[in-house]
Length: 315
Image (cartoon, rainbow, N blue to C red; front, side, top):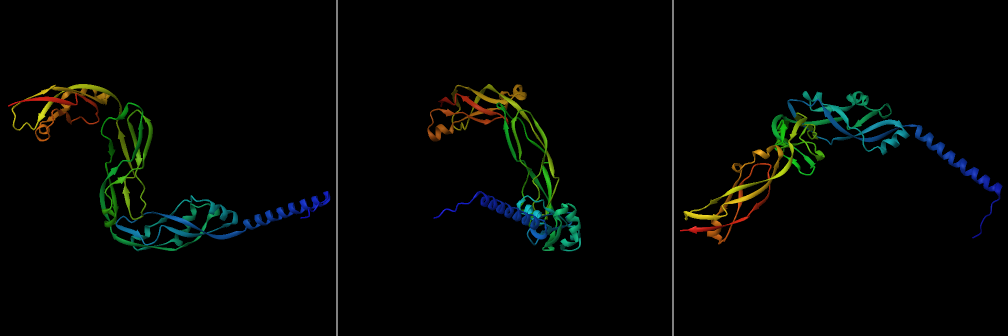
């Protein structure tokens, strides 16, 4: 293939040509994108002022196609922006009819929109709703936790949720499916002290449901834990046919962890250790395993020594 050799003058002319071509293309793109266009975007709907005495559900999806008027630049950036804020629809008119006309709310909707992102129409323009009697139900709050404690620290008492139950109102069939209402996840690391905070309940994803209140107070007692050892007497159970049974040893050492503020209160009376004689009679055990049948809450058993005891039966 022949190689075309250009003189210095020809190379300059060619460079000028391509520079001018690039500038012309850029100028055309800039001019085109500066023109005003109407373009469609998907908008997510949220609702406010839901009827208090009428339960309802929407008969169409919670997204609509909105026609927005703006420049080509705005259309370009709108397509790039995937995190658009939802538009809020006022449901006050549902108190006496079963539909809402969106075009009548464009002024209120556009107040919260940027001046360059004004909506000129929405498809569909009318939203229809199905109604049923509105019922009220109380359900327990389910606390969602993701806590990581510092070494030797842990929950030391009952977790308190105020209020422990919240009120949900909505259609009868929908309320049958709701047995609890979850909170947002509480995530903390290196916890060393009692937590006392307010947590939001998970948001309502359906316009025909109302939840009250929206937040709850959560108190999680946290304390440092340490080990303690007690000597516990072993109680023999299921001694149906034998009056005189001796166990060796008569006491076992139980090592457990407990919160520092409860350390002095951890006494033998709070525990119970048992050995089941049925294991010998029914299964031929030669020594009986020790089982702790009563342990205070928030205590973790480290070990029982010995784990098995010997016994002598005198008939």
